[in-house]
Image (cartoon, rainbow, N blue to C red):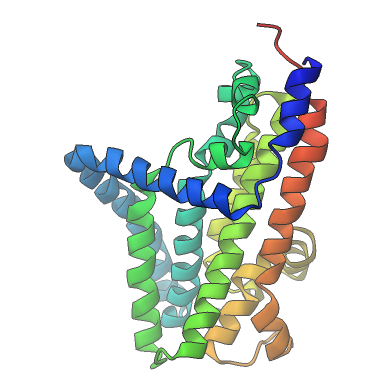
Length: 285
């Protein structure tokens, strides 16, 4: 990689300015308009995604029908966990296609240099690589299941609860986005995407659909202190449900726990820039 390309790679790293994100939202709107030109295809993909997600919900219902209330958790409470994590993952999955396919599309082909030479943030370019609107099916189903869970539990929406839900969703979106960024960073060494990352992303969604208390102690600690998934998908939902945490955490901790997802995303971007990009070597083509 020549010095001029390296210089541009360093200059483009500033993605924090308001102008950069204004450009991002313009590109997002452009992408949505282009997708809407093929309405039938969009509707079919959305329905297909909803059917796939619905099959997961059927499995959860069957488990509760067979085993009752595991660790005292009811189906309505599980619906809240399910809805929250699926809404967040659908959003993260929709905006991170560029990071998910980073190794195959950009590192192996050398097209990464083309992106770095553009006078735009590399992160923003990757975020708008493809807005996967087909994930709308999972998102809509998550919203419906979440509303059903809250209604069944008699939890009425108010401003504080709505803010807590939005904070929790934001933290969870940041968490899953960070996983895709870490996957892209590893692609600088492996070139191809690592299947082990799917264990953390899709496997993380599966695990987060249930409360941490139903798992073994070592598993709870792993997803709380190592992966941090419990900090964005379990503790904040306990606060939303308005119940005492069986694990003994305070309400303040539960409310602030989603911020760990934002910190995790910041850390992943630092790794991407200062470890991944510095390791990148040109293909020579």
